[in-house]
Amino acid sequence: MTFLESIFERLQRAGGAPVLREIRHGKLNSVSGDELLSMVQEARNFLIARGMKKGDRCALLASNSIRWVALDLAMMAEEIIVVPLYSRQAPAELVAMMKDSSPERVFCSTAARSTEIKNHWPAAPHITLLSSIFAGETQKPTPPKHHEDSDIVTIIYTSGTSGEPKGVVLNAGNVRYMLGCTNTRIDQLMAQHAATQEPNEIFHYLPFCFAASWILLLTALSRKSVLTLSMDVSKLSDDLKLCTPDYFLNVPTLLERVRAKITETIQKRGGFAEFVFSRAQQAYLRQRNRESHSFDRLWLGLAKRIMFPEIRKSIGPRLKALICGSAPLSVETQLFFMMLGIPVLQAYGLTETTAICTLDDPLHAVPGRVGPAIPGVEMKLAENGEILVRGPNVFSGYWQRPDATAKALVDGWFHTGDQGDVDETGNWRITGRLKNLIILNSGHNIAPEPLEEELAQHVPQAQRIILVGNQRSFLGALVTATTSNGVTDADVQFAIEHVNGDLPHYKQVRAFVILPEPLSVENGLLTTNGKIKRDAIAARFAVEIEQLYQKKPA
Image (cartoon, rainbow, N blue to C red; front, side, top):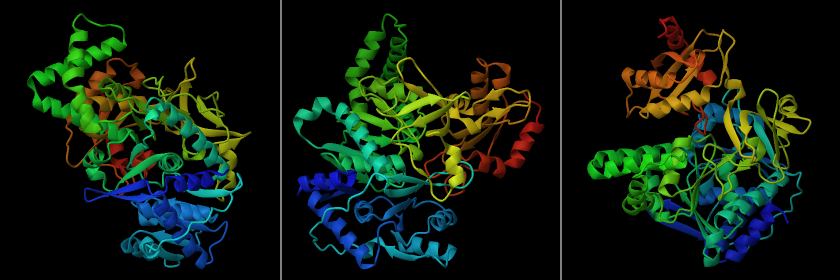
């Protein structure tokens, strides 16, 4: 049975029970399994009537919605290749990806977005608004067309931290295998609650055009669950209260913000609450390091009784775990949530590995590591420390880029470009990107990510800290602040002095500059999933970097 046939069968079994919900204006709008299948059939009929056939490519440019899901399933059911695109991305970048994938048709959520595309690409194929597909007529569903494992189901464009994005070709075999792995892990997570026979409640806010987000969607649809879509990222806290999920997928940025917000709230309360929380946090960390003091059990026990339950309730009263991916999560943040009684499970992977290579074991998560390789997947380190991956999750190649494919896939091993290490139990840790290595003119090689993360811990009001120094005599730091939260020279200097004290001379940061604008997707300095574009930042702030190196180093 193909992954899509399994999803259709699951939706049929759900019948009139809800499987998918949207939160709009503070209210839940649900569709049942039967209703979703009817919408899928309505979209399939639309595609068939317009002569769409197997192998055609269609771009799907829209934010998350029930309609997005229905159209995605419909295109796959008709063996049409889906090209999902990020709705917030700059029009010029979107047009470049569409020209590369040459879609037969573009599906768009708003007329304004459609106009932008036409303005940047007068020769664009026909653009159809999602609202014109779904008339709400009840349709009798038919089984999806049968995929062979080698059949292409989607082309997902990489975020492009350097250079232009490439289309990652994923086939039915990749997806089928991955859904087997994700379902197994969730079964482990929910094992002690399986006897209730209640569906899993899942909250979701990350765009479906990202591979991990899409895999979570398909996983949810393939099992007994209800997936609730938050439609407004500014209202995540309120939406969480409506959903009360068992688990949901996160990026480190959100968890860092939640942690900072909790800490700030407690500090503002001050008094006994702040005192107890601070002592409990210190006690928890000492306990993990087996360095407990005499009163640690008292402070930790007190916090567990009077504070932690209220904090957990504010995040999600029935949370079994927070799942985190896209970038390494700081150990401090992972331990913070674990202290509160909320496990944080990490995953590691790339679009090219169908989103996932490793998954934390729910019963044996190791802070700072991203779990063991999923069953059937091999991982090893090259001589230069690069992580190589081989298995049924690895993509077949980049769309129309044979040279890039040959460079990335060597003897069946995918070269991830990531650096890491693995412990004796098989748990992996990601330490940085190979191409991000800073090589000083002294010959010293420095991975910037760990230092950037440590500095950021001491400047929470900074948006990002980016190290520079390639072929220079010392490391420098670029600091960005959000428009709502400034950062001062004194803040940065304090952090640098604190971190430098434990470092060898060549790893010490000797100068810094606070940049005049924050990084964003819109100004081209962040990728669509929030990763920094180092080359673009270096080009944009070349003058500031040059001035930084004209300063006398500290």
